[in-house]
Image 1 (cartoon, rainbow over the protein chains, first blue to last red):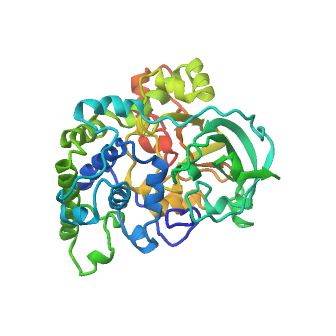
Image 2 (tube, chains in turn red, brown):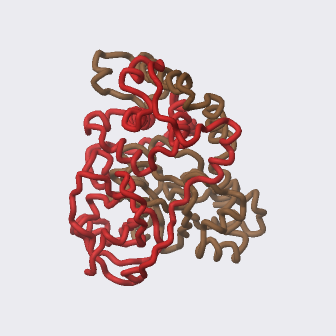
Image 3 (cartoon, helix red, strand yellow):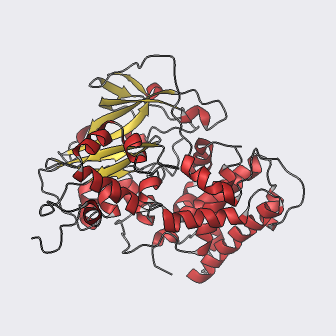
Length: 219
Length: 217
């Protein structure tokens, strides 16, 4: 969706502000927000793609005004309610009022090292051969779905070159909406700066994205 | 408290002119309520949260990535492996896990400088760099890295030669990128541990280059 998260090429956010010796967390609640988010992810009730979509659905003014972990907390609230783990009333009160959905697993402390070390690989076998080969010119589709997609706006309807076929991966546009993993071939597609940004672009610039096969057409 | 705008919410619920400490108290209260609720329902284990935080505060960080870079500088066979299959090469050094499941290493050269961003969220190679800094997740960086990378680099104090090509990698899938900076001059014969000390987190994102050894000009 064309949400507030899709920031590539937008203007007006000012200078980047690197912080010397930045700490990992700027407040205690950020630590708990990280841990809660990862713990709830272990329920097995939603995918990383659904959680990304929950965050990009935050209204733009709220999204852009929120700190990063606040965005995470808003996303988790939504997912807990959607999947029946907590009611809105419980989320507002901060206390349990009724039984809710039962997760596939609850992350206990002794499971943490194993779970973090394993991660969640999302490469999957597919039966089809890749439609495109390295070196081939391709054009990205022009679409504006209200659902989740990982094709940024700035890279739609643009012509680039396939640099590499990366293997087949879970298709987030479907997986975010409970429609299955439906893996597809994934390609690294490189664009010249001028193709993306016009004649004033840095002449030395190239930008690549990782694009699922259904984002692409032959050029 | 630091003074990054990015860490300050100014949403509707904060429109009453709360000062910053009150703002943090709001979020502290909200997250505390969430943790209490989920604990009461048996859905989370607060000790697991402690373990997650401890892992990312003390065990997983840029040192892992610097280890990979120093090894690549020192061992041509490892560098080749890293180019062909970064996931396996990095895993061979013990750096595996969440947000590092599918790794790709990109090598800076005399001709090309690489820069990594995630314009859509905050995709970042946790297994080799730890948790991302605030600026990496903030709109200023995510919006501008793809359209004005030279301007962004200047804000990090890095001015590249005009003819140096810039290649930006927008991390739009589950591939996580590690920039292998150029090995500085004057480092012949250095052991891996000393070399790793020249590699900052930012050099592995592409917003810096590797440090020269002390005494080098």
